[in-house]
Length: 486
Image 1 (cartoon, rainbow, N blue to C red):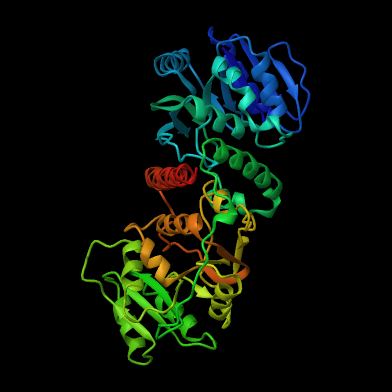
Image 2: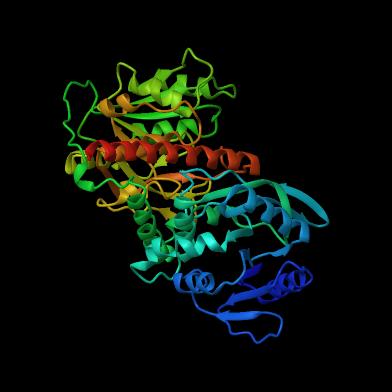
């Protein structure tokens, strides 16, 4: 077996090398680094682009061992002979091209299990978490090198992503649900900034490459939808209100009044209302809403009959309400519109671009509305020509979201409290144009009361698995459309 270390820290890489040298099953060690390192213990490959296609291809073409062990040099990794044996056993049993496993995180002499999630057809995010160690079947990788997107261009950043997607088309990507190695942690990572890495303008060049690789993958699996196939939208005029701002809420006594008032302060040349779906609040939120409704009849306060509704179910209550407007516009109960013209801008965009859905941009702030990193989230990775395809690769479409009500009533929201917006966004994008606004339409307040302020590994895994399942379903629906068309 050949061990391949992607080195980002010299000292950590040397520690990994020293631990691998004691393993009889490791025949060769290769360290990929931006700096040329002279060593008798391993082969050093110098490159500015460790994940570029030229390096990945070179490693696979010249590999003489049955398996390649890819190691992320960002952390010190502890691997044993038992680790290698179990990886190889699974490879032989499953005919997999790419294998990964759960692992332990070791911090201050304590071990914490870090479970990963199973790979499925919709696990196409470029940031899918494989942990720090993966086994590649060299023979399978060699066999399908000719099917890589890199046959068409040079890639600086997405060669490994290209390899993974290609292997997933022709072989299994398999998780071993057992911790087979340990990762030594020195401090907590900044998960907030990681969450928004793909919309960081500094990463734009990376994302353009990833999109090209992913689009090729969709074409190869017959799930690519050309932009020219979009349906036109015919806006009806039979609505009492032009727009309804929808606010699902549960236990937001500290923020709900501000959210509602930011809607009521909107200046628009049309009639609008705000539909607050109060999902059995217990902290005084209900009373706050009632105190506003008696002063302004534009506020509709709904308490659903059902007690099992998630955020998506609450949205369905709003869009099927008799007084829901032509356009249903999102505002979370924590947040505020950034100006008195936000609603007008959203509605204008529907007519300007004849779209079924509009997605704006937002600015991250603390509770006192001070801007916090990374600031503006505008999703400029979106393009009219390919955004509906690239939407399957990224983990969110942006906010605030607004919908042409007759169309969203046909689609309906899934009754969940995570990913409900992404699910309907994918469905809309499959058939209709989505309009984008790249200036901040609202302020997203981050505070300890946010539902995603501090998530456990188990909850993050459940969320990611659910979104991958949405992608799986969407990919299969798009494949069916293409089969029918031909």
